[in-house]
Image (tube, rainbow, N blue to C red; front, side):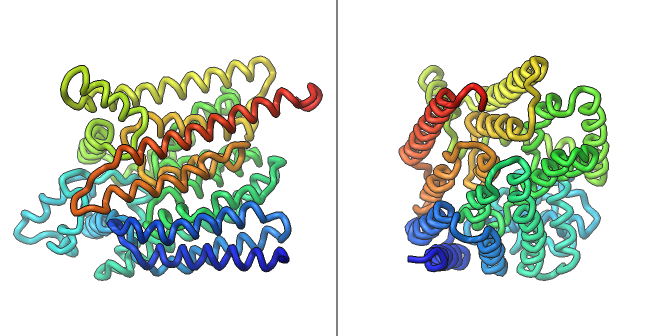
Length: 451
């Protein structure tokens, strides 16, 4: 069988299955999801493992084509879009989305234009303040401004913004890998992954925007354009807050003097981005949402669930109000210790370069995901992108297994199946440990001159 035939078969399997996922089953149709996701994942693995015989451009074209095919589909597995529309229409009325809970506007005799009763009923968390930072809010506002009366058209415009960010990643991620001395085809592990396709372009999660700006920041960092890197990093943080975890690792890369300049510019750009939303309403609303995230929300956790069980055994009730913030502090402490270790290695003459930076970033996000009480499927996007710069592929396995969390919605009422959570983490952790041991053996077997 020729390489072109193999590519055609793998591409057809991936595209047909992803199309079925985007336009077919809903959140509660778990077995239909598996019916489409399993062949999509097999096609993806086939393409990634058999990618050496054809030019990279073929695969990058496939990545773009897959995104264009699912672009017109309404989100099937998430109803977050209705909160996006709600926030966008608030901005269109000149109202800060963090100012009041949605129920406040519904109680008004004349609610602001566009905040209909039908839209309110479709919100999944009307009792919570919004938590989306300014880049996301800007996309909501612009999309609703361009299509003020149509939920579908506003959704399509938001997807177009995400598509632009993804195309940026498709262009830059292979180039960044190449200049770091790695195969650019490693990027396919992220770019063709069906979970990434469905959860970003398909279900409109802003991890794709965050990653697009993060890759751009790393690219400019490699080009020694630190000022441009700082601006891109600020945009990444303003899309999703997670890249804040990586900032301390930049000190061993840039040195103290340049780091202070970098952080000053980063802080200035963030202040400008957040300025339209700042005020007492933002501080109270955003702070309340973050507090709830660590003290109330629970989904597909690992370490937290173990500690929750121990707390119930000792006290008789759920200790999330204590465990959640304690694990957040543990994440900050762990990342700080990693940064100190990287700093000490730099003092010994082992400068932290981009490949090493990526490994630290991967370790940091994995620590965060291990400790957080909530791990949705799209959270795997960031470790999946970062792993392409490392020898580790356990995030690829995780991206396959985490779809099992949609089994929670399969019944008449939401119910989390802890045995599936245990299966997910035991398999992923076991494979990660095996990969780590294999990597240690490879390093030991290398001649000293190659180290």
